[in-house]
Length: 142
Image: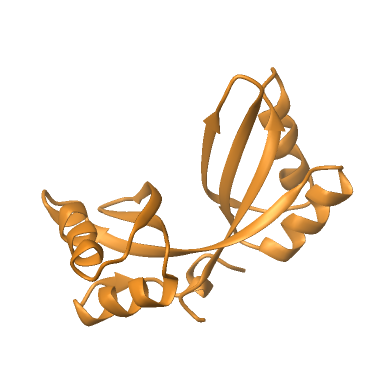
């Protein structure tokens, strides 16, 4: 469980100002967004975010009337080099772990990839066995 990173998933209406409202709610309550991705459709946006205090974020967002869900994801830190992302996804593939979605962000000379997979513990075990730098959830939290 120490490698299970809690990701917030929030549905927003697809209209001007909704993302700004979401970020203001968190900012006003001193919750730091570490990573965020917004996926849109014609009627709504789906925000996925890693924050420094998931429980606090959930509480303040829900108190503002937003629907919040948690999903556990895997975070892997890699060097910014050609082929590293391929190595990670190949490791998961070779261990029959299906990647549902992925996104990334960068810190100076390295990248952090977030993976949602169908079998979380199996994916973590495969990556650790392959010597990958799977980040503990505490890496992101206060």
